[in-house]
Amino acid sequence: MNTAITSYKRLCANGEIENNQKQEELIHKLTGFLQDNNKSFLGGIFSFAEKKKQKNCFYIYGKVGIGKTLIMDILFDQLRSNNKKRIHFHEFMVHAHDSLHELRKERQDNKDFLISKFAKKISKESKFLFFDEFQVTNIADAMILGYLFSELFKNNVKIFITSNAHPDNLYKDGLQRELFLNFIEKIKQESLVYNLDIDTDYRKKNLDLDEVYFISSSSVSILKINDIHNAIIGDLSTEDKIINFKKRDFAIKKFANNSARFNFDELCGIETSAEDYLHLVKHINTVFLENVPDFSNSNSNQQERFINLIDVLYDNKINLIMSSEKKVEDLNSAHYLRDKFTRTKSRLIEMKSKNYRG
Image (cartoon, rainbow, N blue to C red; front, side):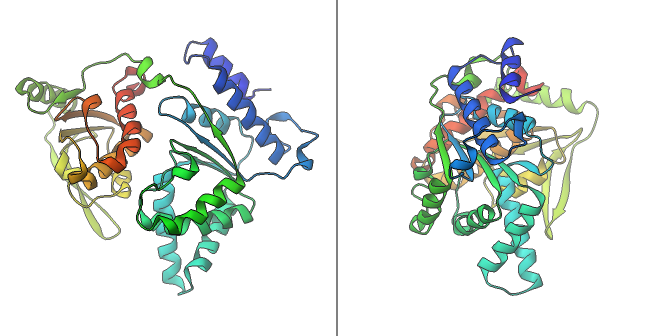
């Protein structure tokens, strides 16, 4: 029978990944968690399962590039259930806010009732939720997460999370964070919290790079970007393609042959959100992003949008050609975004690789 650990070892044997004992240990822990919570999982029944108080969540945290997403993908693929869903946390929260908005139009009930109704709908569709890159960056998300997760747990939904932060550090320094502390305590109470303590960033280690990132001020860089752009679009003319959602327009700049070309300010210098980027990637497979600035506390809003953009591009395997004020590894950050930006830099480095770009 095909199991998670078997799949992991096969990837190692094929040379696709490098074996790591701590990753193996985590897979065994996750397999035990699955077996404890569902006797049909992965072909096993643990005799002690019913004697223990079962947790509702498995929360994996650790540094960037150490294989958290890889292991989650392996477990998801091996999970024998038709009621499972893997989703980037950004996308899930967009769906949550949209659904609550629609429910509110149907009837003017209090917020907790609407969240409970949404949680019941989710629980009918998915008994197992896999959230990759769990992070809380705004007060709107923070205000609904506590009650939403409580209701999901009440409906016996099992949740798997990867994050760069320990639960105690979620929404750190966020607006009105004291209102979020009950959620942190709830997630710790309901979760097996596991630190995948690995120092190696495999994204950096296993790279075969071509030149796709450039320095904005270099005239040679501009010529190279133009050459790449012309090679992709061929003889096609570009146009600003307008897409509409939620009664608003969004312009895909210089659209041709499933590619788009933006100046940084056109994509991150205006009021945009992860939802905008999720709609964008439905129409493209390559994006050019030019003149990315260095970041500091003075342009933190733009930096946060850039972080969201890279998350969406990465999760949807969109090719990126980019020019920036400094090399990716030398870009600075607003103080409160430093931890998140470390992950973004790691993803940007991986996105240069031939393995990412297929």
